[in-house]
Image: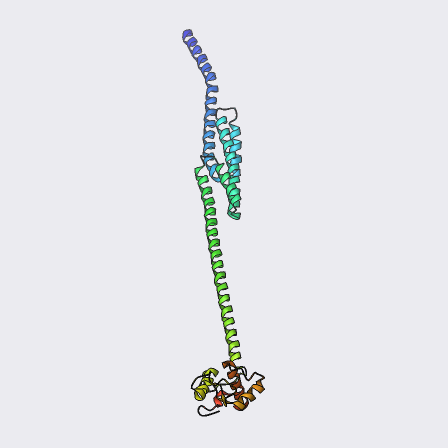
Amino acid sequence: MKFKSKLTSVAASALIGMTLFSAPIAQADTATATQSRLYDTINIQFTEAYQSRSSELINKITKEVSQLEGTSYHEPVEASLLHLNQFITAYDKATAAVDRAEKTRTAADISLAETAVGALPSSEVAHKSTFTGRIQAVIKANEKAAQAAEAAKKAAAEAAKQEAAAAQAAKIASEKAAAQEAAAKANNTYGLKFTGYSSIDEARALRNMIEQGGNMNVNLSLNLNYIGGYGFAKSTWLALCNVTGTSPTDFSVAHQNLLADTLVRDYFGGDWGNVPKSGGW
């Protein structure tokens, strides 16, 4: 029995010793497992933080990273946190630059935006692609605006050209009308009527046809009894020259017309339509 008891005592002592030795190892394993889970959680949160850039989430991650200080997990997550903060700084700078480029659309701001986007980590393909797409949209919008401005400039130049041409045409037409009016006035000094005729020249032509068969350059001499294309008696010719204050030796067609018009004014009521269409005056 004593042997048995001694054996039992030895076994009990060994068991107690094993228990005391195992306790720190178990505690260490539990701590390592907790750190590993936290490490995995932080890495999952990093992915979300890159997408949301939430300051609340980043603060949470920062606190959790500090909990891993002194462990083998701390260094990699601390480096990842530093990279995340650098990315967010670059992302915010790129966002501000692209927003400004979209607002001003100037070449300088577009260049700054391209530089800011280029500073983003090469691994951030999705973000860089989004920013680049927005910048390209601004560039294309500027190109379209430039094309529209050029088209408007050409249209304005063409409109100005047409306006100038129209103004020139109007000026020419006005000058022509004024010249015609002046010519008509010169051709009808007294503003005589010519009822029944299309023009005063038609009325004169009929009288010339009646008197001299349509020839205005006939009997051009004061030595004749009847003078000129209208067949004026010499006394009438001299009297009309006296009224008009013109030279009796002026046998031009214009002078003969003036004398005929004077006769119509003074003796036919100012209307060639009252002059007989056959026979003498």
